[in-house]
Image (tube, rainbow, N blue to C red):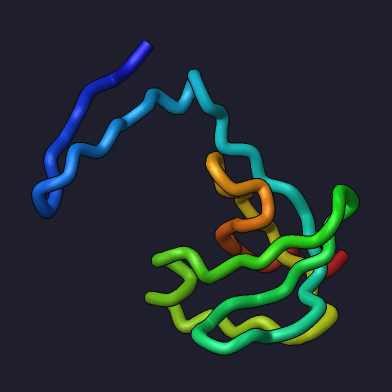
Length: 90
């Protein structure tokens, strides 16, 4: 079941295989920008608070209110997520 363990900063972190907990992305709309690069998002299931992924931070992608984004929901906290990318305009 478990892929392995790794030690980081004196703590033991559990690394799970992606087949056990699939990371699904869903579409959301940015409702508001919050302090510290957090965003309040609205999805079909409800609302959540998300921050930017490392790649979007590195690329300097900016998101505005009303923009559609792809978000990956956190595995332990369903009210949190990570913005993966912007949804291309149709």
